[in-house]
Length: 270
Image 1 (cartoon, rainbow, N blue to C red):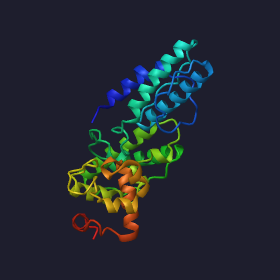
Image 2 (image 1 turned 60 degrees about the horizontal axis):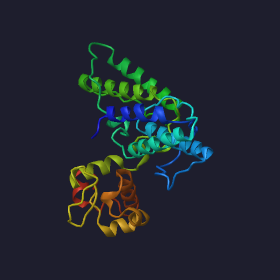
Image 3 (image 1 turned 90 degrees about the horizontal axis):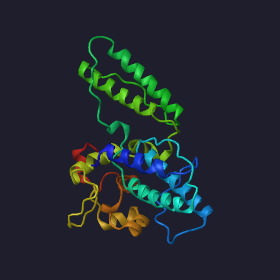
């Protein structure tokens, strides 16, 4: 997995010098390189603005906050240069997903809590996370349940501190698509467990055994529960983890966890 430093450098070196006045609402997806050069200055400004907005959207999705973009270049040559660089930046950022981890999957910071007051400090971080989440438009976190032992409480304090720190770094409201995957997909923990047994947690796996992706779906399964996705992207090893989980969730509605009899039983689901 590429490091966060690589993505930050890409934004700092390429997005900031090249970006134009970005729209407040982010554009969806990578528009791709232009079919032909557009010498029209107004058209170039609009293209640069759209690309800058898309780059900022991807950067935000990755947990980055690029500074406000400068004004567009004054000349047609400068605009063409900005447009070209932004195409590369958007193409790079749109393929990155290593930083788009749910908060509860991020590494815990070193826990330094000791002595008394752990319960009070955990409650404080939980309240802070709740306040920040509501400000950003997220759902209120689940009610706090203190861990039983001191070691568990130290880990719990570290986790809620990490959550509140991440939320505090955000300035814009978090859109539905940016919420943690565990919030967006039904049976997230169950599918994560099943995939761990089925494929070792590899969501892009295709070994030639007739089963594909992290949940090892066969073609008939894919055509039944995600026909449009199957037509558009092929077998499940080409789908994202979220797309695979959503297809599996539709199967669970109809059949429960029966499609994975052995691994679902290993995960305590049957």
